[in-house]
Image (cartoon, rainbow, N blue to C red):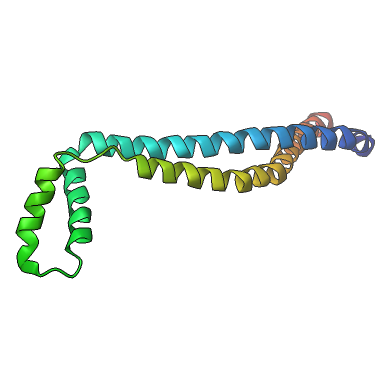
Length: 144
């Protein structure tokens, strides 16, 4: 009796796991990429707001390294002074946010593809484990 129920229930479970697994896998992978993108951007904006002096030092040091090039080290204090007079504060991290966006857009197709393949298998194993648990609980009660 149990074997015939399994054979009868297998096609609907497979169809449901394919349909719902693909749709759910796509949705949840899209959601995970969006959350990763938002967390990364929030982190950079928070760092920029919370630690402005550290961000400013990093910004001016990067400009200083670019401007020094092959110049003598004796001109380092003058160049640093020129940079601090020219830039009074660090700019908003547009470049970092744009790079995060591009990386998220590059990662998105691969994440969606993994959702298409992993979603149905996840749904099928969840449904089938519940089915096996229900059958074993049912047979356990009947055998007593």
